[in-house]
Length: 425
Image 1: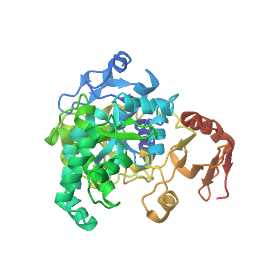
Image 2 (image 1 turned 135 degrees about the vertical axis):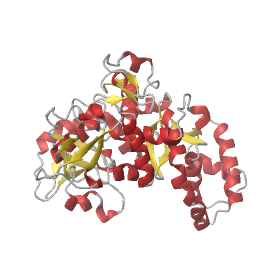
Image 3 (image 1 turned 90 degrees about the vertical axis):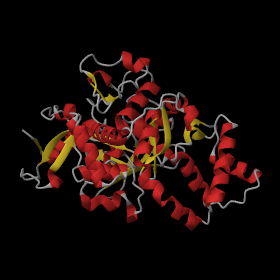
Image 4 (image 1 turned 30 degrees about the horizontal axis):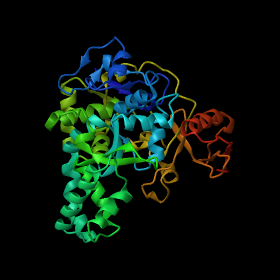
């Protein structure tokens, strides 16, 4: 019998899958855990699904075990990809899911070659487990690379210019342990290349999107630097075809909870048809199961819109009515919202413009009450720090209740916590 999920069920399961409840677990794909992760794994479960390569049971590692870098890596593997265009925000997106971690643990995970920052899909920067970036790009590149020639035409960059820039870039990267964007541009100038400022982002994207380079070790400026992907990533996984699509679908649902096929298509940038191929392959392997969405009145949601796909282990916990966290402070671009196209259980649609002012694609950091977004926050720009909170109309936010969370976030980043102030709605 197909499980029927109420909106409250979907919210609870999503929060658990997202690593935002006390009983959340970080999943480590089989064969990819380091010695410390393997030692900390639970004894329950049956190992690897042979069709997808996705770990179950013995490959699930609690995000509060191991070293800080191992805990951050466990979160990254559970989430598969965390939106990363805002460098500071991406670090907290990992840290908030690994209690007790610090920003240095994230930097160490990069230094240990466990995670990288690159473009796995959708033409968007993400933080990804190092072993997964290659096969993810191979599965999704056809959707993003097709538009590159038109983009270069707009930029006034010829194919010959791109070839020379790539050749010069790789030579410069090979000559250093890590190269930042400014040093890369300086190498172009030293090589006598006449380039335009608008070209730099495209070239860096092209290098990373094609798996020639990736952002790995942390430089003196505190951000990841460009390295050769082939030399930096020590144990890349090899997946292609339907197996890669099935792995994408499985890992996406493990880290997001109940999802629809259109959610998966949007998140990966794949077509809906391709998304369904991946979901169907994962379902045939038993890695995903179908559930039926109920509306607020308890009636089934008809048609394709009512079909939800869920990790069976997560679905097995649907009867666990464990409490959602009373309050959460989530970063800008957090997967709590960015992981879905259908996010009404987490955010009242009428407040979307307050999260993305002007609908410009820039998601603000959010205050979450029992799984639902009720306001936004930002760090005060003063030497004493502090949190400035703006509630949605009709929402009441308790500054005192947020104070401990503010302290945790400040300790993670190594900044003064300051006071929490709640603005007029």
